[in-house]
Image 1 (cartoon, rainbow, N blue to C red):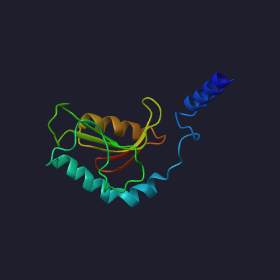
Image 2 (cartoon, rainbow, N blue to C red):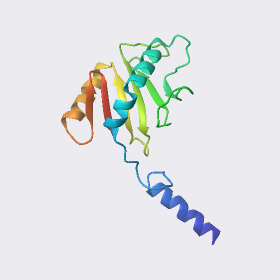
Image 3 (tube, rainbow, N blue to C red):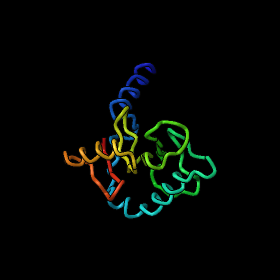
Length: 141
């Protein structure tokens, strides 16, 4: 009986996008952007400068003093994919919802021209992807 119960819980969790409390979160991204835009811009500036070397390519946790309501962390990528910050090719995803596998929602800041072209194409296609301002996008991928 316990085995069947465990299998049922696993099935429901996987089926509901790995969120044991139901489906995806409903988020008013315009409200969240308005409320957190300055903090995200300041953190982006700090990441680009990376004076203390505390940010790395790949997944990062938010600083403990950062008041972003989505504790999903953020991802830093660079056009050259090396370990040095290239602020001309930087790309940062501030996750709102990590989702399942390659699906996510995030505020994206990018200076990478290839990624900008891809994001602009997504925005033109409509759906749930938006350009907020130069170099800033809301992507629901």
